[in-house]
Image (cartoon, rainbow, N blue to C red):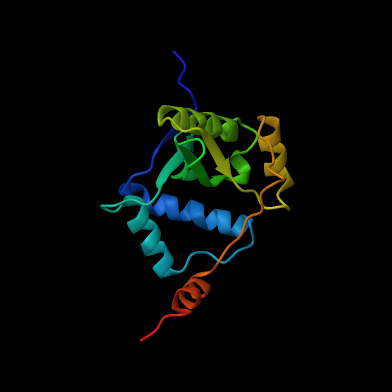
Length: 166
């Protein structure tokens, strides 16, 4: 009897060190600063605390953690259904080309279907051709009619304070 070398499972608080090391690996891959100590605390609180803001999944290849995914739900008022939003999907470079990414994506599609989601959405950095090719090979469609926008925490505070009296 052969067992599947790829295992995907919900991350637990006991996985904190490996989870954070994979987040660091994604930051290194994207040439971004690694999360600060405060951000690391928030990641653990928001993922594994009493009121989780996201779900984290660990990806193991032959018993070794090689990737992770972070998801949360948004909601479509027009579909009147939840959307599974994929914040991160990362597989260590040395574990790629073993079917790990495809296995994770199929798992997440199943998770979205199980939750009754009307769709699954995510964003991809414009320079990450490897990811773009991967998603398009799976049949995902790039949405050209939508543009992503962002306000930072400082901008949020500034905007919220505008027009306040008293």
